[in-house]
Length: 200
Image: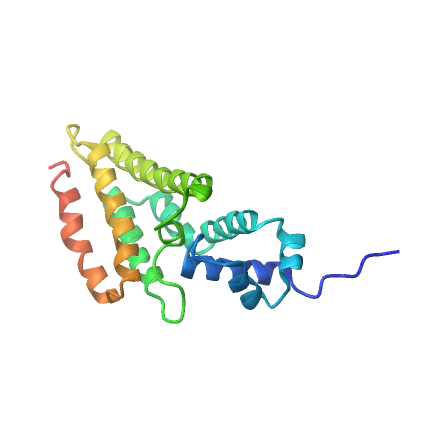
């Protein structure tokens, strides 16, 4: 006898869960929050996704494949200079992090503000995601040095760390309610740092 079909759409439920985690973080999201947002019983959430942690990991993967993919696309766009790529990444971050009616900031940054030792594995996993973003920024700057866009003595690691810190800082500022106009105003002075390393 065939089992009774689910009364909810799994993809829709995953998007709803993503927004709850994005808003409240991993530890700040209780199972009751997920039950309310998804409109299904906790037992059905576990049946569909396995556990809160498994659901969270799926939600982060969804975020990174959709909204959070802007940084990857900006940094890997063919024909763009490093300056264009990084400026686009920061501009799109400011836009995404301050959308009206949507969770503020970056899900991967804001999900890990505070945590207990029982959730250390999840927080380590999130830290690895953030560190990987830094690696991709550093690599993009190194490519610019190799191509001659930036001077050979450019400290790619320091510049990459600088722009990664700014990217993550934009998320925190957006969560604190700093308006989009002020976040966008940070970008020109930040780009002057890269301009100083441009090959003359």
